[in-house]
Length: 339
Image 1 (cartoon, rainbow, N blue to C red):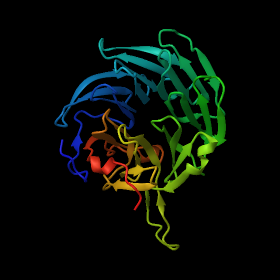
Image 2 (cartoon, rainbow, N blue to C red):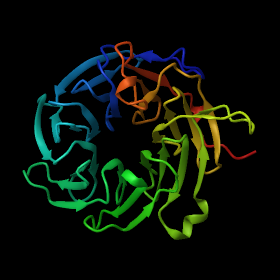
Image 3 (cartoon, rainbow, N blue to C red):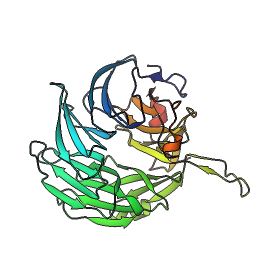
């Protein structure tokens, strides 16, 4: 792949989903990219060293697939959907089986580290359930204050964001009781949440073009801050800004810097420690709905796809659905001292 500061050199994945792309995740052990889609399917692509892609597998939900997550050993992929179930796909056998059930669509799935791998599923039924995927009933169920919109985990931290701007933080050594409950530091609806690689905090993005960096412990509260992004205009009082949703936050696996991507069709790389933007990229012409880095941070995948920011009326037959692969230039993601 050609390393570039632009997006014109980015490679397009062949045979993309045929409807909105809800979540993408790279395997932690290989360059396998999973994509869940509103066309009910979950696809797995193998990314070659030259940036080309090969469609490797596909399995189906009976309603839109909303989320996906790889097991830590890369042998299994789990996905959740509007059919209210989670499915487990085994890479070696090519078979998918149901492993979880909720009373409403499953919005998020995450594997939880610990003594044995546990699956956490979060739903619009206002619960998080923990599963041993070999058993038909959940190990534990916790009730949330509202419908779950976003969830992420880096052991022992799990953070759940719900409707009405609630945030519920769990210490997974005691997963059935909240460690802390609070209101989002952002004034508008939560769109995405992503835990720091160190597990001591998280980044949260809202529909109002704003990101907050939050540490868990009170002693680190002075390090919390928020910033505006994915906006147009607003340079002076008379010039009203056009504000876009922040759809995805990802942490670089090597350098600990992070990316944001939004409904304005742009993505950028940032350094939270020096509180500065490292690199911004040209807009791609349509919303970016979901993004992820591969296991060594050399590839950044982004989905050019409708993100439902204008409701069902914004979904037209002309809406494009593409998965693009950006070859990461290391200078763009390395931490930088503030000048």
